[in-house]
Image 1 (tube, rainbow, N blue to C red):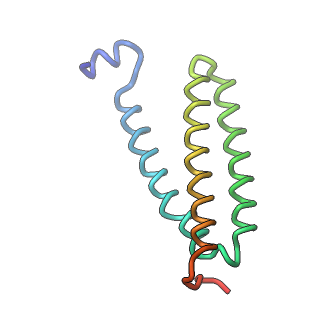
Image 2 (image 1 turned 180 degrees about the vertical axis):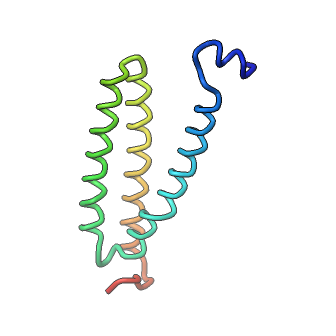
Length: 110
């Protein structure tokens, strides 16, 4: 579909483009940082790190819920996207924790 047709239908190709690019950057940065830290230091920090994963998941659910209530037209999209990303992220952390606990490599914190 031509960009001008998207704009005529009330959509904004530019905003969608930036949001898509931004979310890819956020997801890659998240996957390369915190789950990796948990894996590297699981033997010394797994309970604390998982506490913050759980709190972050609750915080994310609050924000997704507010967005869904504020813009009911897209509530199902907010909820579906939030649930999918929460599930993926939580699985990454669980994998990082288990891999770290099973690893024979030393952590970076003592």
